[in-house]
Amino acid sequence: MADGGICATLRDVARFGQLFLQGGVADGRRVVPTSWINDTIRGAPDGPAAFRTGDNPDGYPPGAHYRNCWWVRDPGLPFYHASGINGQHVFVHVPSQTVVVKLSTWPAAWREDWLKLTVRGLTAITAALQEGPAEPRPGSGAGATGA
View 1: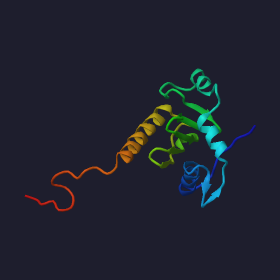
View 2: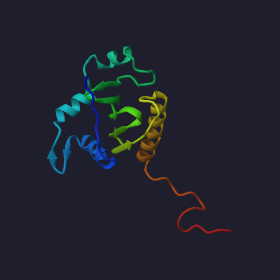
View 3: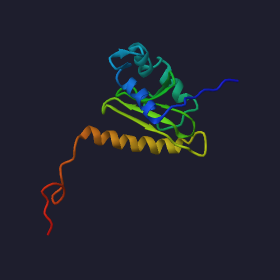
View 4: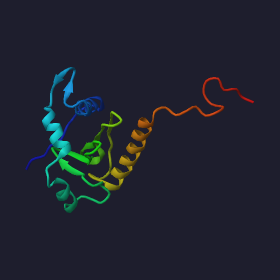
């Protein structure tokens, strides 16, 4: 029998995600080959079809696949995550240059419904980051005067 896992702090897991966001380079040094990251994001030619016909739940966009221990939700962006049991996740969202680590203690090893909620929240955050700062509302922020 074999098992696996990682025992790390939130900061170290975030650094791991940042390593992938930066194409495998940390502190100016190549740590992970670019070819391995590109292979992960691109996936195998039959990867998306195998993913759809496997035991994966509905709701993943076309092209989604699992490769090299990463769940690639959208290879076109790219947007992918590594997930462990009981709600441990590291998300990499390249367009917004965002890494999110979520440490949890779900009562069950895997809850697809909770993962969907997590992804929905993360998608909202990355969309807001891509939009840039919001315009100040009248009557709020610096220079506002009260009546």
